[in-house]
Length: 202
Image 1 (cartoon, rainbow, N blue to C red):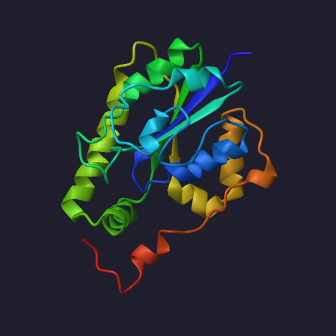
Image 2 (cartoon, rainbow, N blue to C red):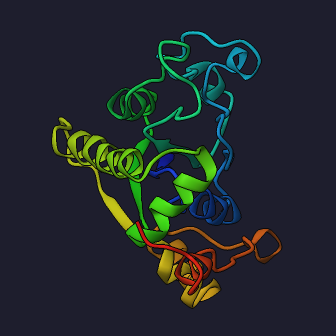
């Protein structure tokens, strides 16, 4: 049976972690955090060059795998302190190991997305908007210029918080993954607070 690599890409604060948790509950190997099992592990402690995927870690796994990356990656670390692989390099590394690729692109209400980035990173509205634009440009440029067509699924954060486990099950069914209810993600509405009467819009 052909192994698959599921890539979860989206702007910071767009729901990539939540979608990654759903795929983990569907039996994929991976992690929902900032550092991935297939990153250069020495960077957990020491900044440096992580411009390649750790294929040795990939070869030690079996079954379907997950790779999560929020973009532009490393907002909290100014270059050239970290050098991360491009989306194309990530996908090609897994493809070279014989895995079939499927990309999941996360989307979230723009106002909430921007406000969340401002709160998390202490950046301006303009910087947050630029981050979102850069993230989607990177994702769809990689998809459109790939030598082979890569299937992709768009997942909205709003669908997840409105439909909760029904949306998770539907996503996993589409990806032909089986949900382990014990690992089901905890879903909370993190949008509502950004539309409260006391919150100013940008």
